[in-house]
Image 1 (cartoon, helix red, strand yellow):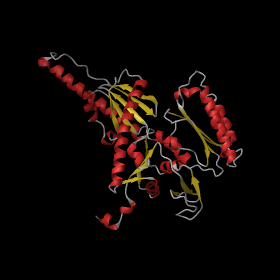
Image 2 (tube, one colour; image 1 turned 180 degrees about the vertical axis):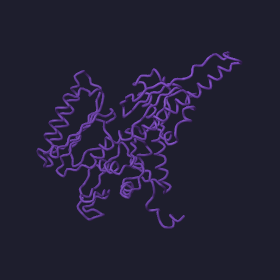
Image 3 (cartoon, rainbow, N blue to C red; image 1 turned 30 degrees about the vertical axis):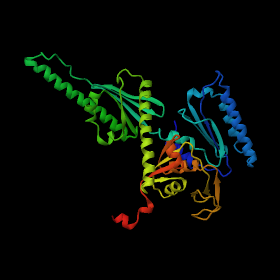
Image 4 (cartoon, rainbow, N blue to C red; image 1 turned 135 degrees about the vertical axis):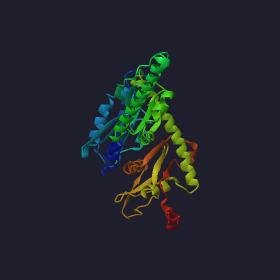
Length: 389
């Protein structure tokens, strides 16, 4: 299971010999059960990578890693409908292998000076660990949802006072007394669930929350949830809290996550473009985004699926520049050309712990250059006069 720390480590890697190998496998629906098409595609990718290395004077560089990739590809056989990412550099004894949700655009293999992290942009926004809490008035089940994998963490039942008939006792007194006990027991149960969620959150066991319960239960349960826990809530799902299978919980929770993510994506696209047009906390276009990234202004980077652009990167300070110059504008040292600056941007975003939002093809966003950002502040507007006001 890949984590942000894994991606951050990969983003920091450089190999001046150009031997950093990145392999992404996206399973397809085969025309026969042998999955031979996938192995053939991998072989073709390896052959092209070898030819490219030889053409660029890196004969033998990454050959051992390429042979190992080829051997693995022969046995993927659809990989149980999961995608796979492998990052390797034999000269520095690096081999990192991860299973991923099958959300990659295609199977790819690249050998370069840095690992190819662009395909992970679509995975990054789904990385936060989600706790799915199924609750009724006496039972609770907690699930850990990471990407597309789910595991049940806890299940328990709290005893409730048994309700009698309304005619029990003098003028129904016993029944009314039991109902009050029942309501109090249910409230204590909800407090127990909220306390367990709080404890797990404080220990870093989850980052986002989904609750599964009936509408009439939600109002009672919500009253017991601390505000800072409720602020992590993605939403609620309607599901049988007792009998639902882990797969049903995963499917319903994933559906809700996708819905909320799409709503958030559309809202953030509108906000970023609108803020940029109003000269506010928005930036559009490669040059402006690179500048904001370097000055630490960016809160969330929006990166289009179809974004690609050339740039240069300083070999000394790492400064990225959309101007194709021969020397760094910051320190004057030599620069290297980047055929696609996406990997360098993703690497810096991850290293600086900036949020990233992956944007599928969108007409308005494409007009803005397929790259934009929401800013925490505007460095060029932090003048003494503005700060005083």
